Each structure stands twice: as C-alpha cells, then as structure tokens.
Image (tube, rainbow, N blue to C red; front, side, top):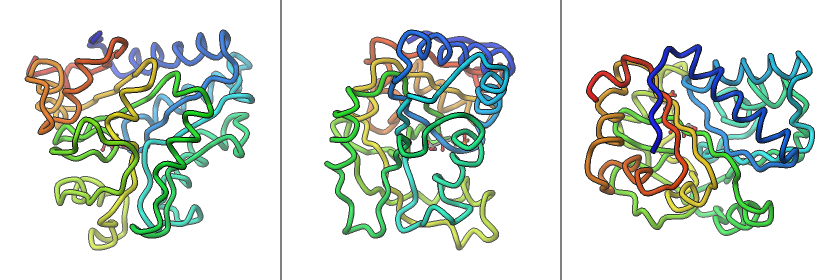
Length: 239
Ligand code: F6R
C-alpha cells in the first residue's frame, strides 16, 4: 500500500494524472467511481483537464460503487444524479457506458448482472474509493465478509447520520443501498483511496496500520498489490 500525505490540492492533481496516463494508454479503460464529498475536487480537476483538451473519457466505461435502493436517477439524492452532475455531464463520457448497481427494491437486485457487466468490460482498471468514518468502503459496513460481491447492504446508523447532510431531513436517508462487495473492489487492477479531514483519521489509521479484519473493511486493502492512499495531514494525523 502506497501512502501519500499531502495537501488536498496536490492529492487531487496527482490522482487526476493517474486517469490521464491510464486513458492515454487505454482509452476504453474501465473506471470505478465513488460519490460523496471526498471525490468532488478530483472530479472538478478531471472536468478541467477535459475542458483543456488534456483528457478524454469518450471511450471509457464507468462503474459506480454503489447506489441507494429504490432511488430513481432523477432524484437529486441518487448517486446517478450526482455522477451526471459532477463528472459524466461535465466531460465527454458516453452516458450509455456508465453503470450504477441500480435496483428498485431489496428483492429485485440481480447482483450477478453487475458483476457480469464488470467482467465483460475486462474488469476494473482503476477503482476510486473514499472511506467512511467506520472504515467502510463502498457501502460495505464493518462485518461485511471479504468474499462479498455486489449486494444489498443495510446502512449503519452512523453512515445514515453522516450522509444526512445531503438530505432535507435525516429521516429521508434510505436504509438500504446496493454496493459492490469487498471482493468486487479487490478485483480492480489498481485502487486509489482518498481520505480528507480529521474525522477520517481513526479509519485511516486502522486501514493502514491496524490488523486486516472484517471489522475494518478498508483494512483489506493491505492485501491488494496496487493501492495508493492519498491523505491530507488531518486524515493522517494518527499515523
Ligand atoms: C460513496 C461511497 C462511500 C464514501 C464514504 C465517504 O460512493 O462508497 O464509501 O466514499 O462514505 O464519504 P464522504 O466522501 O462523503 O466522506
């Protein structure tokens, strides 16, 4: 695991260069994306590079980590809406090549369909992750088996509370999400994880320096051969 502790601006710029280099080499690369507050600046930077003519996503395929169960794409709280607004709609992504693990109800999930789509794309070349305060990656909460594939996950109260900042009322935060599993994430050829802010310090410590355990989902990344963790000084404060 490579750890880079720098200011956010540097981290986002350095991470954006990974996309530029990858897409120059492999224009149809399969890219895994996260939502939330953390990747926003990186997405701004990727959109800026696109406007400057330095990067093209025209042939890239996108696979998002997760989506709330039962949320339509026109709902402003859906991750599809988020991705269209901050990345896909600001670059030359072909929206037909952008995928979310969408399902209308807990029962309707066809997890194997999403896994198959990823497999048919040749696997994910570069997976972007954030990290939850409890060490979750995607919506894989503590205790999720390392062997898990795409599945419906009940969100912890902590995660629902953390995500309530995006909703009008905390009661509107969904209880279930569909997420790539830990094994799905671990199959990606390369992984970038961004962690910013003091509230991530414990999780970053446990991910990097703690034991590999299902109670800290991100600790599994210690077992992956190509992971880069970008952290600002606050997030790295306990290392
Ligand atoms: C989002 C996701 C989550 C977030 C994590 C951190 O698609 O999978 O694991 O990355 O909850 O969220 P923020 O960045 O809002 O602190």
